[in-house]
Length: 423
Image (cartoon, rainbow, N blue to C red; front, top):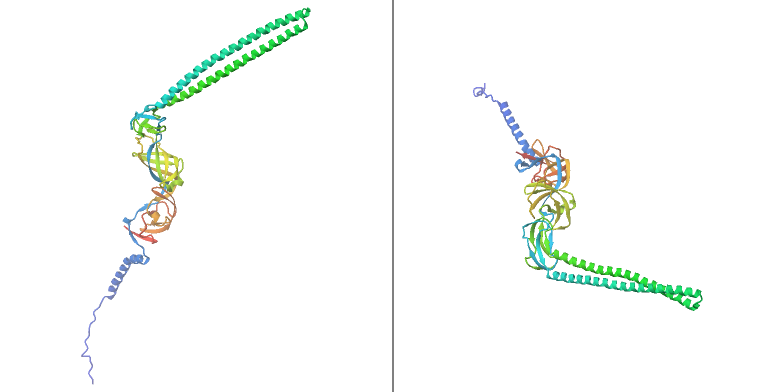
């Protein structure tokens, strides 16, 4: 009988291990790691950039009044700053210094013109000679008229004599004292006397008419010469140059005691009672400019308003010059050529959706923007914009009031449809 191997076998007791609990722990750890790594893997898979909130500028969408305007600069100029000119050729004497206050009508300069003085004396002599000639002509006309009246009286006497002779001849012829020939001769004598009297009477009337005409002619010559003399005296009075307005003397435009020609600029007088703003507007806004547009200005720290009253017809150095009135409610100490910052209002809208201006408007052509959601993510959306002011841009569609928009530059993430904002 073959012996078995029972004597060689050894019973080994197996240790009881907790494999299910370990597997559960490993499974829980794997799930936790997957949960934490899932957003990162999702962003990596979708290429969503992570942007620091400190690098962004976020603004809300508002509703209110929007004014399309342009910021310009300029200077204050006197609305009335006349320049004084010389009226004659002569030597100038300036009596008011630059910066000196002058009153309306005050003497500020004087011209001396020896040529004008000499011409006045010549014309005065000519006027006196015409007056003498007029008086002499009047006497001569009166003498001629007197002579003609004497001739008329003589003709009247001859007529009376002829009438008496004709009456006598008529009686004598009736009594057959004189012949018919003598009677007819007396009749002819009377006719001649009547004719001579009528001619003498007409010559007297013509002499009176001529006397009236000659008198008027001489009076006209005297009046004409008087007008010439008055004009010369007016020019002489204009040698005393006075201030046309109340203000201050600007600059001397000629040197003291210089000999100057006629129509030479002498000085400027600045009227301090009223100023205007001379503004330089970029050529870009040239088509929008118009008379009556509102202009808001800041002068010496004071806000004042005005309106455009004049627009230059030309563009120079890409700028359009405009003049605006200054309507100051309070007194402002203005100075000539004082700098002015202004805003020209082209259009005003009420109840408008708008957002603060930012670099975003140029990043995507103003057609898209990133709206910030409650999950701290920015999503690209299409927008339509309208007019813009210096601070805000009108939103026509794409956004609603109260929504948040990224208004900073999109250069780093403009190609992404979505971004994650880290705070």
